Length: 238
Ligand SMILES: Nc1ncnc2c1ncn2[C@@H]1O[C@H](COP(=O)(O)OP(=O)(O)O)[C@@H](O)[C@H]1O
Ligand SMILES: [Mg+2]
Image 1 (tube, rainbow, N blue to C red):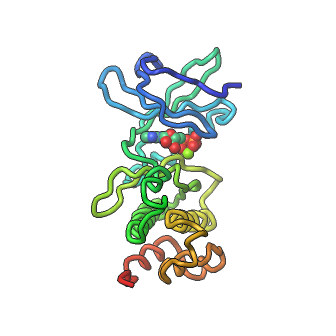
Image 2 (cartoon, protein in one colour):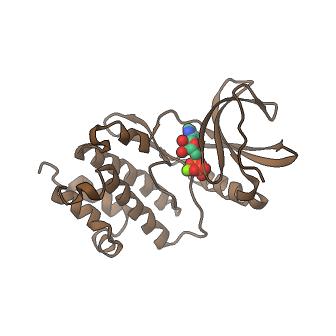
Image 3 (cartoon, rainbow, N blue to C red):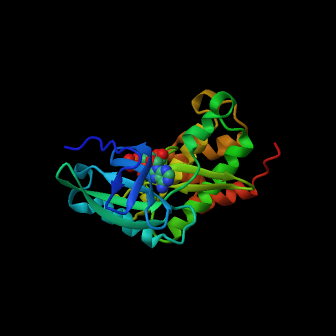
């Protein structure tokens, strides 16, 4: 069983790509920044542990989902799939756009008290809701929203974000979309300092978080669009 690939910078992959650096590690595999030899274009390559990608099902569903959602600006762009041999085993490599930026988890840690100021948190939530709304409109869901699957690319007038790592639990249902909505609210709650600060948060924050109770969230927001509209119409001056 492969538990790590441990590729070193300079190593060639499929005769076409050079390993630039290690980017991250997760349950499904390892992600490296790579450079296409012919064009010198940088990409991200996720090397799947074969045991997490039986019959290539995980990779095929992920690729098809990203392809279907290719017009959503919040998602990374899928490029191609390669198969390489590693210790005599075939390994699937998922190649996508390389996103420059910082993981939301690390972004939040840069702030005093490791939490975002209110206005930044509200803008972050708005950018997320706006991006997820487009995915839901196309009949899909993300399924694995948390601060290690969100890259902050740029903070301008709004947050420019990219989401990684969509999860597939079968055909989309309203419950999947509702899970995405609850995950967004959970991220908002966490970036504002979590439970420790919750009681001291302004009323508007508590109105959104609903104490993280799913039944209350369901009553408050019909869907992600409802959350986005709430953010746009709320008076944030108090
Ligand atoms: N396209 C990308 N651009 C930049 N960094 C990436 C990209 N894809 C993944 N990463 C980095 O690799 C880590 C793991 O990738 P991810 O796709 O979330 O895999 P896992 O399913 O193993 O969590 C991410 O948290 C991120 O730090
Ligand atoms: Mg991940």
